[in-house]
Image 1 (cartoon, rainbow, N blue to C red):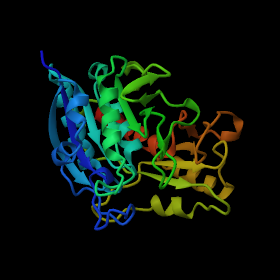
Image 2 (cartoon, rainbow, N blue to C red; image 1 turned 90 degrees about the vertical axis):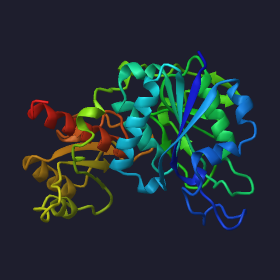
Image 3 (cartoon, rainbow, N blue to C red; image 1 turned 60 degrees about the vertical axis):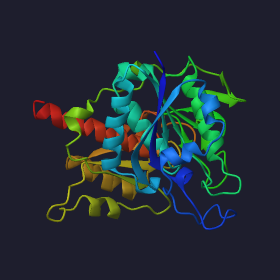
Length: 332
């Protein structure tokens, strides 16, 4: 049976254009369709090695504007493609700003059995109109990963480096090698079209995936906010968040605090968080440090911690947990 690779476009810098080829920051993201974008990569057909490409434009947004509607549509289309027996892999073109969040979200909501096939997110730090765009090479590297027999689950590929969805973070504002996997390190490197694996890809059982999007696609996305600890941080922002919402607005159901160091929190901010927790708001403690995890102990003050997730990923995990609990309460 002929193998297919489904390319799903969502916009981002990789599909962006600027008025000047020398302008790598003043561009407009999400201007070029995925089929047109990939058709311009001359070596792509050769790199596919006989695998048939399938193109689908799922969204066309700057990834800073990615939202629940785009995530819901993307999750459904990825699941649809993975369910096709002749589709061997999915490659998603995405903006860099929220790629780590989308990757983690997909790793949590896609059925575990479908994650036996790879879902590879790739991106670009320079627009398609750049004098030297990085998107084409990233796409070719993503294809190499998608075709690797060792690849499975949700992965991210940028600047020749393969990252796990759980660990990948954008750590630089401008350089082409903008992503890092912290203490965990990368899964591998793509070198001249060949993947050199350093570690095995996580199995579906290790991703924590347990949600069925068909059951919650129409459910309101729970409101979970993020606050940060810093010198002089107060509980005023938390109290404002937890005040009675305006008519038609959602109340806050959860708060992730990006603490300093080992999840430490200014005493006034901590008072505000404990007040919110007493009112039924779920609180999760993470750290704003780029590396390391919150190590549980007496100093963490009894607040739940993020199990090593970054603040933005801890927010997604808490949202999914709240949704699962809501469905259970409703008997779904």
